Length: 381
Image (cartoon, rainbow, N blue to C red):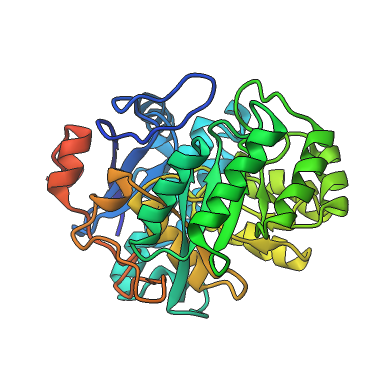
């Protein structure tokens, strides 16, 4: 079997709110689908947390390296792509795009062997994973109403982030967290994401230490991205003094970037994003490194249905990973699959049992959000 072609398609017209200094619009592209075609008619799918124009440029650079490669060897092929392009800028668009290819190669390997990716990663520790509903913060009353609505859908774990938190006053911050806890009750998990990777984040270490104490008083499960994402020194100090777990790492890419953060115990919980970090091959190595250093691995998942499918497969294959992020209200999560996600009566998601990622894309929805109709590979015609 060989790779004949790789195509990309940006997702638009439904991009969820959120963003950095400038608000993302529904027509903006921040997620791109990848399809890997083979000469035996099997296609694998992946997802990239990067604008489609950048992904197209990366694929052009990578094409001489992946064309005619064996798609049944995802780790070797991905490492080949990394090793031959790191000098172009390790960790940027090229790395993100390789990650999307890697996810698709694991999908192909699973389809050929008839096994879910989690089993190919060494075995499944669990058949269900708890999703936590991830949503942006709002003013207290509006947030409470939103959380109540999501709670009624069956979710029993929630993460609130960004929005006004850390951008106004400490009183506002505590009011938001109190409203969230009151809305979901004492028995649900509540996590808080400061979103300090936001452009021009205004707060510092002292704010983070004070806020951590306040969050602990409201039984918050973890405090995510409380400091700018490159401030290793302050993360180590904060984790050592915080009364609740500190989480982060979503903007880091490739396993080498994670090494000092894990060895120095800058996090209690590390959160690589499979659509950004370099794919399943990289993320599982980071997960093993985390375990060896006493850090819990829970993937970041503010991306697509394919990213969530990959996260579920990874979670099934790691013994301490029992949570995945679920971006609520996004058509790129809820509408892209033939069989939509559904939480069960206990607020859990089943790990897909089918071959590969275990999910089937709704091609009408893909066409709606990308403007492209995927058929056969031009290289196999």
